[in-house]
Image (cartoon, rainbow, N blue to C red; front, side, top):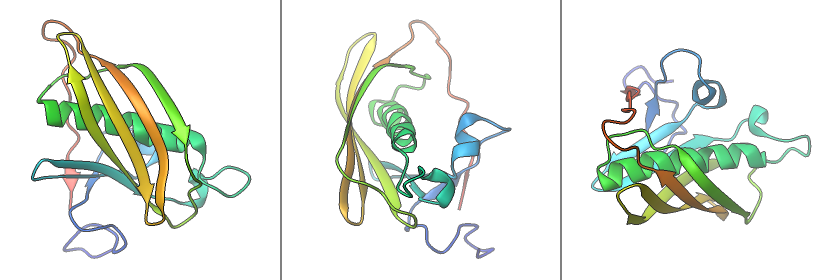
Length: 155
């Protein structure tokens, strides 16, 4: 790791490490990286052995985790909603298998935002093409709601 960038050399340009506080589900499953520039929002991670199933391919649960995070982060940032939005429903279509060493990247398209719900579409890809397609419905809390406690970014 290069001290100047504080990121491993194999992380694509523009991505910054999400530095979760404490031990959380997200901190133990990552490391996850965020890219947010010029309206583009993407989350990603490099597949390690611990992210794989017994067959040696990327575990579907890990793909679903990144898709869920991507829908929440992406919708929050793109729609300007500064609240934590729990997932109400999410469906997944597994398109291909990920392998150790792959860079997996998630991007979100916000389809519609109502007073109480947000609808989004998520694609996970690798250098070889699409891995997973997901459709998400997120609950927008009324009133103040639970605010994001944004994790600092490194890099």
